[in-house]
Image (cartoon, rainbow, N blue to C red; front, side):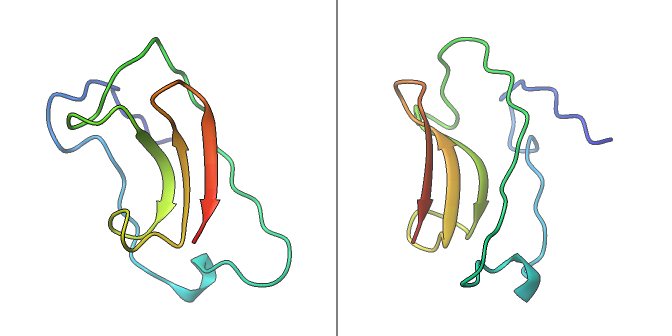
Length: 79
């Protein structure tokens, strides 16, 4: 199991997986899932938006992104 402590005091609270074609969204169905334990509003790196699962390095290169918005809503986008 992978456990992240949820303390955003440094930059090591994430998992990075190398790019692979198997992670690309194709024309057929696909599934994205995550267990999220949100304990009140917080921010990561000064941003109120909290990425959960994404393919890409930043907002300019994401191909898909599951995130918590500043208002606490789940948002999923295909780019």
